[in-house]
Image (tube, rainbow, N blue to C red; front, side):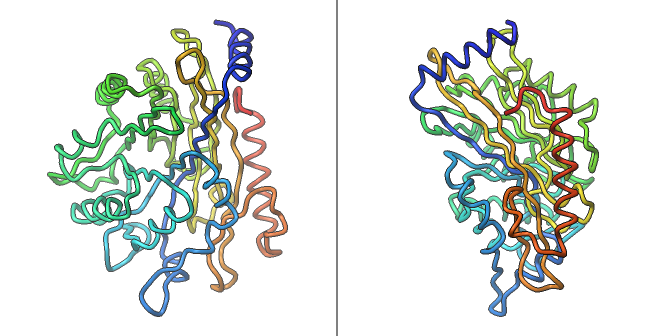
Length: 350
């Protein structure tokens, strides 16, 4: 089907559909040592209340919000890079700020060993926040997947996979979903059989700090699309990469690929790692099926504390008044680089 006819189908759908569904995605939520130190309180708690305030309205206004939890909740002693173990307060703040689902399949998920992976699952369950990607055992994976959520009338299956665990063994009975084409195909099929109208695969992949997707990313994206994945959300490179909407030759509807959302919050220093993208995916029902109407990215910057005072704070691109003088040049360069990248390589993106 040609692009013009697809666009006409979408416009017709917009006229006929009363309800739309918005799902928001952000990238790597990390806790490096300096972040732990400024969040630590005298009573032993950790305060992250200022970190996400400028983005909370957008997160909470979405029908569903997803972030990549790139640090286990491994308990004390809390640690930053290279073997993370974040306090439970971090996950609690992500939930309080509006996130409904945390992805746990990433290269740092085993940093605190088997007990840390198990504890992460336990804490997230106690917080009653959704999570996919790691499981206490095979039986729990079988029970939890396919993870299908009815989001404003659209049944979406969420899957999560990682390229590896930094060489740390995944000790039984813990299960980490590694990238495997056969496994992905099986999971997608099961999700469809259980009634999923949309399938979202969140993939921890690619090469760190590279602004363009690798050949292996593109190849895997094509495989996933051929298996029936509707929405591919990427993380791991710690920088934003292009995104695109293509159209399935079989169904004639949009298939979206976001190669990397970059960092959500971190202490990384490279200019291109100092922020990330929030992607809003607009879904709706058309002719008894759910379709992607559009993909809209927005950029934000991670402003670090001023000489150890205050906390890390995420600043949207349009709120320049919130940027301190000492951060202004880095903010502007991050925005310039990311905008140039999107303008040059994004495809069919709002």
